[in-house]
Image (cartoon, rainbow, N blue to C red; front, top):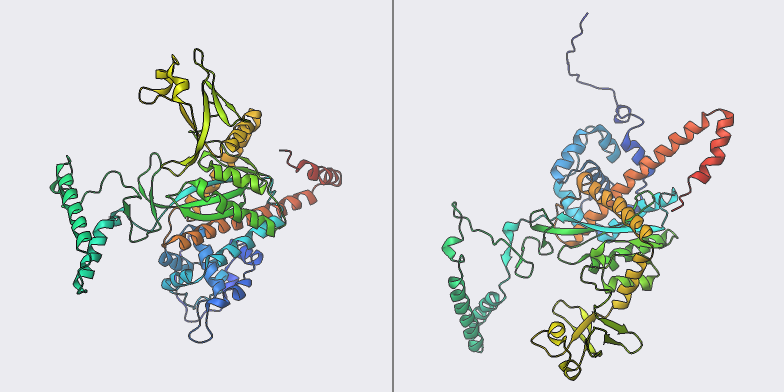
Length: 512
């Protein structure tokens, strides 16, 4: 006979939340493995002795963990999800009839806690992975990815330094009986008049042409951090990647161990800076994380974006065997010239030339801030050379070469990468197969695609939470597979069990 279910609500129920959640539930396993009681002592300094009780700090971080595990970015949506999930309620310690905290409480508490607390929790999870043998420490791969900031490109305003100065001058003039800034005000007014004339004369820059059909202002096609900023989030910077739209971003930096792809270092940085500038920061944190777990790093892998003299100097000072390809402007040799290291000079070797000497003339800093050694020949040596026009050009009568002050470090890296091309090719594949999938997982599945708060400190907390959530999820999978594998081995016949017991420890050792 066909059954038909009818729902009849009861007035009284005899049940408990503990019986409704299965024993093998993910959040039950997470609760059993992750101890967060240390947070009470760590967060005590953020609270006073009087007033209303705050949200439980353990509950706060558990709610954040649920958000990063389920890829929910909004605090409102996150609390709605927690309220409707039985296993999450059990994980948080809230019964069926208890009301969860307000979404604004999460936002205020996130602002209250310092970055060091999030870093301490990240290291706590990392230590669990180290204890289970998931971190080898031999080779670390470093890379970064953009994180969309919580600010729109429509919020950009132009950096008007002179206009701000003019307004400040006018305010001083109104409130002072001494007119001491008249000349400066005239100078600013002349600049405004010149700028207005130049603006009118430029084709396509007429103010009447900078509106769309709806009357909205059309943004310039190319915006720069040098000319524009966002008052909504001043720390967010304009950045772009090939094939993607220009937007306000932060940059998430990661260091990943190549054994089981465990994240060993994580921090946020401004997307307006090069990765090479942030390299010491992410490596300092990674080295400290290893030091606390009584481990050390042997090799560091990174792409050419991290290549700089400061990065190579840092690795040499820390004793790290780095493999970082030199950037595109690097030149291992100069055609037609040989560098004499003992005399610190270049010597012309061109056929038909008079073998002029390019002597060291000092160190200068170019417009981009790079310090370079300058080498120059004398006009007398190049005057009668038949290749002068081709070599020196029609403007100058001497030959000038410049090298980075860190060229010996670049040369050493170039020699290392070309010494064994097969090993270098293997390291390149290892780097891309280690850190890039981790970044993709964080962006698509662990809430690192966009930050819902503002400021560099909040961005750093966001990256740390996404990284520790990834490690925690990988840790639970690892110990679960290990238990299942041991159970399968124990069920083998006696002869096979002896074979696998003696073979597995030797076969599991990684030779590379």
